[in-house]
Image: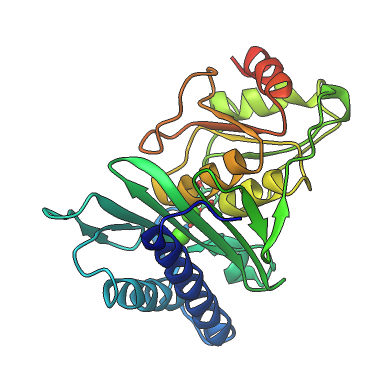
Length: 262
Ligand code: IPD
Ligand code: CA
Ligand code: CA
């Protein structure tokens, strides 16, 4: 049974509705968007902006006093509300541009800086990952949990690497170092979906040192509520405003990876 307050229940319902609307916008733009570069290999399309616009309108029509932080230039600090919505209208833009069906809408909600609700919607698989604080995590409304994997040698992980990093980039060195310890290490192009996959046990670990708050806000809460361990790369408390994250199926894998990656 849900322990969420009526307000938090309404916030989650709104986040789900907004994520679905954003996802529909993304699919409607397939085949007709043009692509620009914000910086080298950092892509953006009309779909990113259109998705953010509709998500924002949907939320603000119900919560006009809340704060907002969205990837595509959305930044509104509220003077009257403790709530802030952290939005990635399209996580995995490179995949989207190339027609590789691994991208998502991600919406996290903070109250006084604490994550209280999160939704990740994958429009290709029609999968909605959701969580509210203290209430567990769900995939299409069914409870989910991490794999619980505790054996590093059996672990399948994903790592996000910085765009355009050279071979001496510490993130690349870390990636190479991890290969001999883990069963499989992949790079997929959507941090939000990677976190969703940790939460439902499809993979056992995900790390990155180059993320933004909108990439992880929803996923951090969803992994936590699914029973996973979330820290920064040094094993300390995570702050979504800083770029590093380590999400694992169990604390044991988290601690062992912390030793390997540092
Ligand atoms: C990107 C994805 C990718 C990560 C990049 C992000 P975007 O988000 O999450 O997995 O490696 O650092 O920027 O740009 O597609 O929203
Ligand atoms: Ca992103
Ligand atoms: Ca994005």
